[in-house]
Amino acid sequence: MNDSLDKDPWNALRRFTKARIALGRAGNSLPTAPLLAFDLAHAQARDAVHHPLDAQALHEALRAQGFESIDVHSAAPDREHYLRRPDLGRRLSDESRQALAQRQTSGDANDVVFVIGDGLSAFAASKQATPLLLAVRPKLSDWNIGPVIVARQARVALGDEIGELLNAKIVVMLIGERPGLSSPDSLGIYITYAPKTGCSDAQRNCISNVRPEGLDYPLAAHKLHYLLTQARKLGLTGVGLKDDSDALLESVSTTPALDSEPPAPDAKKATP
Image (cartoon, rainbow, N blue to C red; front, side):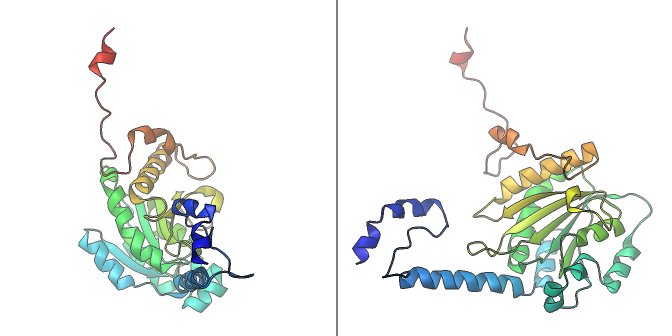
């Protein structure tokens, strides 16, 4: 019976996708192995939603790489409130608001502030955020980067209040996305120019599915740098800012040498 599964013509396509194809059949149901794999994926997705963010470990990882980091918490006191009351995850707790307000300066503004939020997958925030920051930091050498904010029980709009309090020209929220059955650790990036409480989603740009199996760190950093540069140039984000970064991919590879020069022209071809 196993031979019949191996001969399924769909099997050849499985190496191209994580989608559940060519699973086989046992009577009117699935074979045991793919059924158990589905149950495991479902359990991992549920765990991703409920698993708490290890903020201390994330702060240590960031500081080990030379980032200043600050811990904040939304107005949602725990995960149950966070899931039942999305509005609480969009604003800071009183204690966190006061702590950030004390850091606000009337002088130079931060060009960009990065916020790492647990969102709906603390796994994503823990695994993907620091490598992404390391990938994009060399591209922002002429930017005044504020402290990295680690936010627990966070929704996307929490970054607006944080950016406003820290006098940031742009806020970038790195947040765990809603987990899927093949991606419990996918990170989303939300970029907002002139952040302030009350910004709408139409005022943001989004980059999604950041993880090694999806949009890898070099390409995500390339897109993020492009959007940040254009946002600063145009003075806006959202529906008025289009992601045309793919037009530059001819000179961009997924290797570390993202900014390498194009090869010299072939001498034979250059001869008239």
